[in-house]
Image (cartoon, one colour):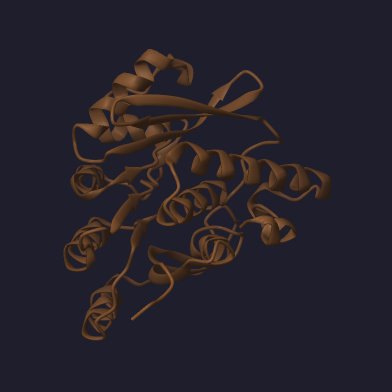
Length: 274
């Protein structure tokens, strides 16, 4: 049966704040790829708000994916995002075992922490299990904190790291499984740098630093890169497209004076993403 390409999104669904599946689904759909969520949790707002309601979906993830399997669904891509427990990481490994076929691309965004600190929900057991996802990933998109955690090495002082050190880190990550690595969100003067590694080759994509941190930026980045790769594009133009799109959204967020936790106003530019 002829069909569109499709990606399974293993991530939480957040009602307000423009993050996780709420960002990924419209962006991937705009790029003419079918987006199929497998929720890890359902939140009213993300945890960057003073109060949030969270419904943990762990107990429902296995019967959910078993229904997909009984319906003989298959996917061209599998994308993982925020995972709330070691049990969820084990479920994701099981999901990949069941649904990864020849040609299925597995893309892992290891949402673990930032600025040298793990998120409060992360335990040592979760860090250990997250490393096991490297063995089944084709692409991994950690920030510097997450790259250090995956490699079990210290976070560099003041977050400063040379290109040579980034190449060594990316090479070490690749040795554990993924062929493609993007170390994201590196701060360098008035720019944000993404360091790309693929089969021993490296490249750097820079974008102007606009405003401060903003919720959902990583989800938008992962979604655009994933959809581009599933369409058969190369890694470097995929990352460039994501960086350019996010820059436009960041500039508009500054113009609107949006609070950081309201996320990227991507709707303004959605029709330009094709």
